[in-house]
Length: 206
Image (cartoon, rainbow, N blue to C red; front, side, top):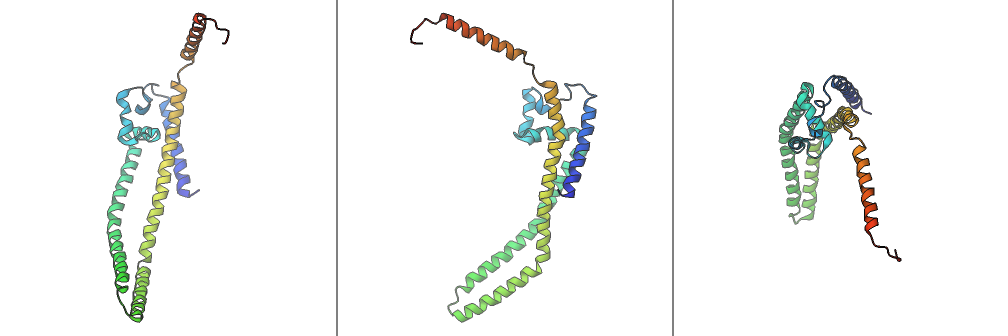
């Protein structure tokens, strides 16, 4: 496992532990996150940022309450905006270069003299190779950014899971309905079955 992911898991566990300890001091009803509350008005929170993903819904409910999480989300969003702006000019530049060489090869194919055509292709090939070599360092940096994005996304997902898991466990332990209503329902069903059978005419074929 990558050191960054290990550090993220440890940090998330510490945050979760602190969150669990503090939640024991609060009222049980107040500790229920909005996405888990039986309130139709609060269900709309799912569609705002978490969608139908309950992990996201609980996590972003925590974000509203935890300054350190809010800052993290703001910084991630800000970094994503910087990345978009920074890479846009490089992508535009590379697209123009690629477009040029595609057009160059198409133009070469218009040359009827095979010897000249072959010579021009060699010139363009060598020029393209030199251009790629010149841009190699920059290309490697962009590739590294893409890898870092994957690591950040993995770390973010791990944080969401580990910080929301104690909450769903607490909710299940505190809010799981008892079995009394189910037992009563089964008893009523059995009575209805017996009454139905008692009113059913006898038939030898059954």
